[in-house]
Amino acid sequence: MIAVLKDKATQEQVDNLVEWFTMQGLKVHQSKGDYCTILGLIGDTTKIDIDLLKGLDIIESVTRISEPFKKANRKFHPEDTIVDVGGVKIGGGNFQFIAGPCSVESKEQIEEVASAVRKSGAALLRGGAFKPRTSPYDFQGLKADGIELLLEAKKTTGMPIVTEIMSAEHLPLFENVDLIQVGARNMQNFELLKALGKTNKPILLKRGLANTIKEFLMSAEYIMAGGNENVILCERGIRTYETYTRNTLDLSAVPMIKELSHLPVIVDPSHATGAARLVKPMAMAAAACGADGLMIEVHNNPPKALCDGAQSLTPEQFDDVAKRVMKIREVI
Ligand code: PEP
Ligand code: MN
Image 1 (cartoon, helix red, strand yellow):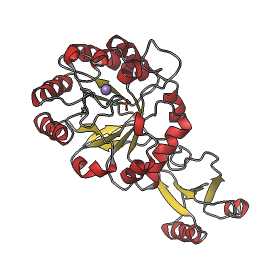
Image 2 (image 1 turned 90 degrees about the vertical axis):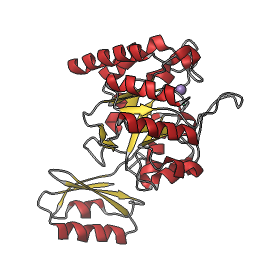
Image 3 (image 1 turned 180 degrees about the vertical axis):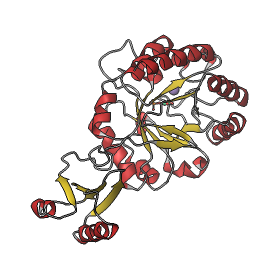
């Protein structure tokens, strides 16, 4: 349930009302906008007399939220959330490129890619250190050493870094990581989501391979329910019967999620398509339908990449994609 308070409500009146809700066993989330204060009530609100509430002098309106996600719900927080990742803002009109290799492979590789993508306008550097691979015999990432190499590249380029976590046990290694990624395969790893909810790190949550938008938002809710509201959502394609593309990029999820939620939504056209030549058209389409950013895999030598070479762009190709996407941004 959400209660919108009138402009004239004094802090004392707000505090009294919050105390009363708390006594009813509800958790209260306050959101102070420019023109009004919104109280989001979490818990069993069935016992609350909505007409009595509406009759209070300081109440503008009261609405029951039927969706199971509360903190991620736009009704709860009408303005777009802007997530600050190491000084880089995403959401609410701030569009960013996250670029870098699928996996960190060596110092030379990550530094070469980092400086190239930065020149082309990428604000954040990505690179997998812990890799979720379908086969246990494939390259699993450089793990802690990979994070160290990312941190060195961050020092030389000034770019905040993004890398995937696969287990809550590894959290101490992520202390200096700016944006922690939860990959598609872990979207419903609820223990991991709960652990991340207790941190204050920005989280990039990728949509699961076979998950609905509601399930996606419920996973964001797990992180937010723990107190961490710095969540960015990433549409990366879902599994369908189609086999020409690695996944099916559900671009309609972007405007749909924006209607339902205030969280920033970015698109990953690399994992969505699995083919470098499809990244540009899908990146442009993602920008056109209102995405807040793009995550794109870039490698200095895609044919030799240890992971996902077929979908990786060269730095030159990324430069072209970034330019085309910015043209689309100008038009919209
Ligand atoms: C990745 O971004 O490196 C990755 C593994 O993506 P996803 O979880 O979307 O498959
Ligand atoms: Mn990859």
